[in-house]
Image (cartoon, rainbow, N blue to C red):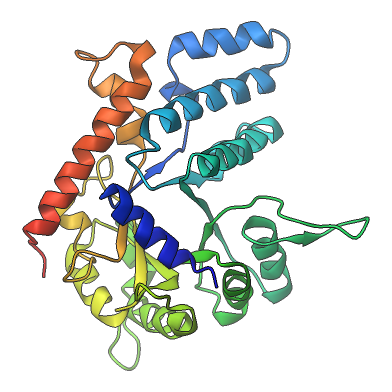
Length: 317
């Protein structure tokens, strides 16, 4: 039976790179020649021109990185804010990356009561019953991020779909934002912090979905900005696959990013978004705007080398 965690582990091993590119585009990130071309194609349809520019930007980055990076992550908000045409671009990007052999994570952070959570789960990683007796994947993502702070009734529908269809979920446990501790650090009556109690639940929920590689398709989001906590969370969730934001633009380096990996250097995938999308701007002395795809590859290769070096010389153990 297909297991998302197995697929992710094997893809990371294939390219020797525990990196996921977050394609979270804003028009500020897109070079002017791409925007100008899109405006020429749709001179009277601004939303279509915007969506076209984002698609061309995404495609170029995928074309330059698909052979060295195992996965992409698409943050729904960056497409939803540009309207329906950009949402179509998000789905087009997901399918294009999958055809290139990459796994695709839908960063949607969904959660709701059971019946609504079921609709979210089927729409994002599952299949939907429609007319004419058809059952169809509407989004087709390989995995989704889930806000589990409503409890099991908002998460179980995602777990059920993941188990049925070989998909994955990443539950928010210890997020990378500065104010994460406002609620996540609250101490419970038994002495645990709230995020620790959530981690214990995620470990419990994930047990039935542990694959051949030793990791569960019920994973966790652990911010690279909290490396000491990440070490403890790995102990609490020994079989969870970790999605790790916070590298690069949010301030965490390679040493912090690999803190939640296992002693064997497995079980985590580190996200980078702005640092790769904006590499052509950061390295303007070396790359022209027309070479933004090459700049993204250069940054991805640099990140790969730094992460693998950090795994060889673990600072946080």
